[in-house]
Image 1 (spheres, rainbow, N blue to C red):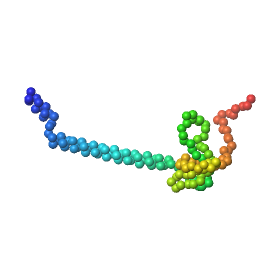
Image 2: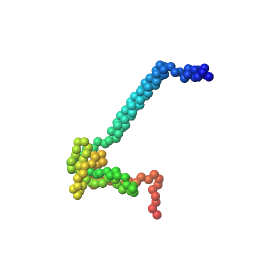
Image 3: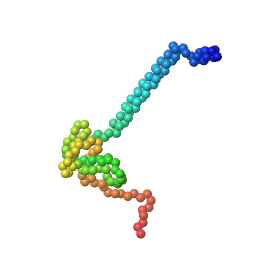
Image 4: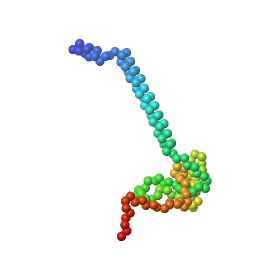
Amino acid sequence: MEYLSNWAVKEINMDLEAAGEARLLQLNELDELRFEAYENHRLYKKQTKKFHDKMIQKREFNIGDKVLLYNSRLRLFSGKLKSRWSGPFTSTEVKEHGAIEVASENGTKFKVNGQRLKLYTEGAFIGKLEMIYLSDPPIDA
């Protein structure tokens, strides 16, 4: 019985120096994996920031411009055909970091993000509607 227990201890490899070296190698490998994960995360964030910054539209507004304000609030009843643009408002102050102060027609002033605004062109001409038939035009009876 004693022989079997000694054999089991030898099989387990109770050599502390070899076990310590193996543990250090595992810790070094873990540090390398963690560093690689941090580096991949940094590159991913850099690419997504570049993509999102590319999507931002550069808009310039001047004092006195008529603008429309985008209403992004979620509603219980969507109203598919209802326009999400409200206004027109008049821009009263333009900040250099993108915030714009607008005034409504009754005189109330408030600040909004410049990305939520677009220029309002008064009396926009839509144009003449032209119909193109892919087959023979219908015959009126």
